[in-house]
Length: 261
Image (tube, rainbow, N blue to C red; front, side, top):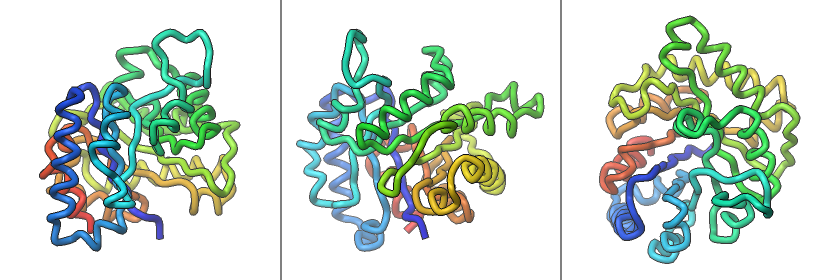
């Protein structure tokens, strides 16, 4: 059985000081939790802004809990070069990152990030030893036009076609219907299960079955909170959650983690 994973995407919300305080709060509630033993069986990923990446692990002393990991919110597809303003995946690895979020709908929307760009970033991240968290999801317009399955299949195909994964490499795919992000209204868990099955079926077309079973996890994201998260991860194909706004309050975030233990 795959380990469940909870990923906190802090977006461009807390600044450096606020990020440090938030990590302190997360660790405080983790240590006080009555489910500490069960929480140790859960992978917890914290993804602050780039400017907080170096300070957060120093402040948090993540070694206190071996299942808490650092992630980034994006990276570039080259290790080095004349790419002003970009961040190398090798640099993320250097500052202690294990995970990196790629292809988030906000980057696709506001920065015109394409499937081809996401594909190149995935390859670069894997080469740097990072675990990519690949975001896929349909817009409300695409959903209304009956295209949600097509959109997801196309995004997964474009992201992963031609990508090779060895036994030590991992990939996470996060299904985030764009129209529910930040709305406070999640989709039904049965629909998340249905969409995850579509995602998994496409990965089986692209990779050997043992790679899909052992190296790929699929999670749900979109208005996740401590009241609804268990209904999602109780589904057969949902291996965890990508959490946005609810991860910005330490106590709420730990309640989400506790809810699935």
